[in-house]
Amino acid sequence: MSNTQVKEARVRAEIAEKERIENEKRLAEERAIVAKEINELRRRELSEFYEFILPRQDEAHDLREKQREEFKWKRVMQCDGTPDPSSLLEINTFISLWRDEQQRINVEYTMKQTNLVLSLIKELYHVINSISKDSPENERIPIYKNTIHELEDTLHYKWRQTAHSIMLKATDLQDFETNNFQYIAENENVALCIWANLSHNPRIKGYFYEKFGFGFDLPKPLSLANIAIVGFFLKYDYYSERSLLAKCRVRTNEYSYDPIPEPLVDETVKPVAAEVVEEEPIDPSLPADIRKLMEQSRRREKEAAAAAAAATAEAEAKAAKEAAEQAALQNADEAKDEDDVPQNALNRKKSIRDGKLISF
Image 1 (cartoon, helix red, strand yellow):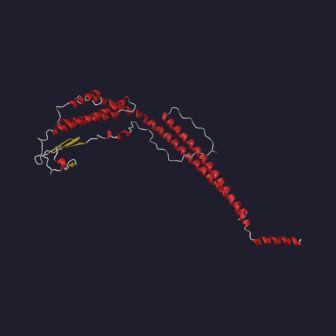
Image 2: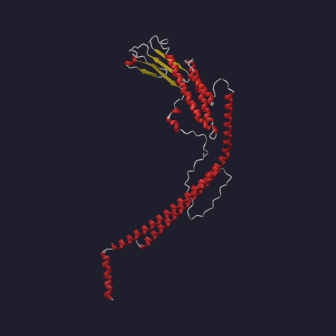
Image 3: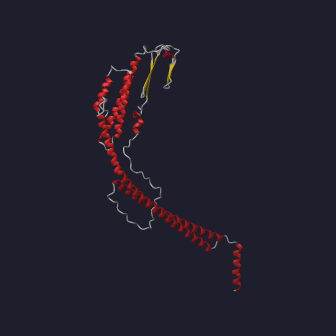
């Protein structure tokens, strides 16, 4: 390869590298322009969204407060003898009187009280969910939850009393076929199943309640013992609020107003050589959330511009290094070609030089 061809190849490589760098700069500028337009569109849409949603947020808050007041007035005008679960005095009086009552311990009354207690618990949950985030009643939420736990504990205590009262009458209610005691009481919220071993018959090894899928097998020592087995089935959610995982759940009272997703655009801003445009000041009349969002967006644009400038400088340095390495390789090839010239060519040159000297 002659020196002319090497120079031409080097020039073509430099021209191609310059064109590549110019194309990258042009594409970077175009992407920066597109990203800026999308960001401006997003700011405008977000501002319009806030102008639309903020008045309605106030309306929703006023409507929630109005419903809360209407619910309180409805509870005052109910006058059916049931306690107000949000009144600590009334609900504590109800729980104390019911827990200490020993006269009406029967299935019918306990089922009736079960329906009442569950309606009070449901009402308390409605009160908790209707309390807004900035309401002063937030301090009463732990009190309401403690009231719910006390109502549930008292309800289960009364059901244990009722089961004990029923088992005291087991002899009068025993089954004539097996001479044992089988009992079922059920409503829409709870179900109570009781089995008592009255016959002490070793042939009877167990019992199964088909309706509830509940059964058991007795070992021989227990088949001769005085035992009773009680199955208490709850048809409402009693465990969720008492589980350890319930403490990990965070209830969000308000909606985070940011429904517009981030644009999936490479926000590569203009290169360093481009002119610096002065930023327009942010309108102070905009809401604080919008001003903060605009400041964050401009900060991201500056960081992206700095990153793009650093990437361009690194690419140019890399291209210059590759060109220098290529030139060094070409010079090494030329030197190698000169060393590999055949010996006869050298002899021919020497003989021609000697002949010229002789003739001279």
